[in-house]
Length: 456
Image (cartoon, rainbow, N blue to C red; front, side, top):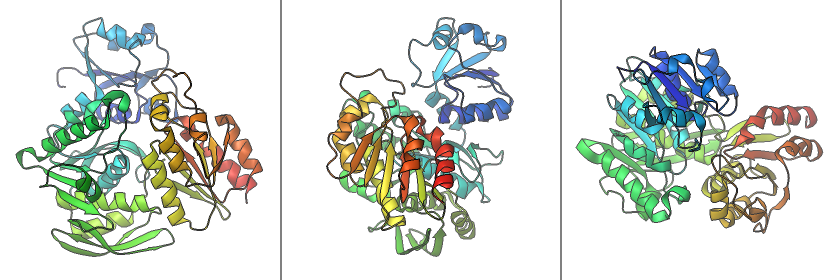
């Protein structure tokens, strides 16, 4: 990285790519990039001095990014192979690497903490980063979401003892990492367009676990995962309700706050507090606490950090007025949807739940339509939006109706994304959840405005 001072990011608007772009921008590199669509995140990058083009046209590549000897090109697998800009760089002797490879290079000179798992890794990474960043240990962090504490997906401190990273299993990207401390939250069938089968998913996680334990590294795994897999037995475990190395005790929930004691290999930490509603927010905070303790955080700093946690944008993010609870969540896998709705039931008991769900990827919808329906049936009413394609081309016969056909309890309507706000003006939900990994997240402000205006 020392020899090249210019970096072009193809897909710079992605949450992981933008964190790396921000990091190198802070380090004094010249940064530019391409993305398909302007967003609030890309606008922030531009305000930070990063040049971005939104046209897949090689003439839009800045002159400063045209010297193969001084330009590194970084891309995300979400970019189509036929993209003109990436093709230009590949055909003209530029060094072109994946985001995961660059992340591996950046973190190899730090003690790294890597969080892997089919679900929960963004929240746990963000919570862990906050606990360490506000402590005397400090940390750098490359996050897969926007921290509500810092309004950023990058934390940077030149005196950091650790780097916290989200270890993404997509395309086996996490195998580029060499963590000192690692955690695995869950291993479920996902990204079958890449892996082909669930057994291949489990093999990849096993490789990640073995890498984490090499040369004295430490590995923490959710107790349920340890029970169901053949992951290394020398791992530590965590659980909110089962006997584990890191185990929540005497848990009490009241008005959005969890109070609990924590049994650890280093003794019991008493009377800890987490001011976030939702049972899986609590579980993720417990995982982050285990990582912070393994990293050496002082007890008083841990206590203060937990109490000041604000969460992650689009991860069970709660907006409340006096008449309605509105939750926005990134859930896009059946297990995540189930956890989100159950958390809403726990946090806001007795309320009817209406969900606007935007399925993500044709292949995932096709593979898991029955599982999506089973999870969504935990709600009372569903607005099913069209599938968000992301990197995929349509698959014949695969639409949101596949899910609707398999719903057996919840009532549902198929609607377009543009109809959501109008529907909310006519119905009065008690708890409303917008859910999905596509562009439904861009609707949060409009939904909040509508609910505040019409449901006071």
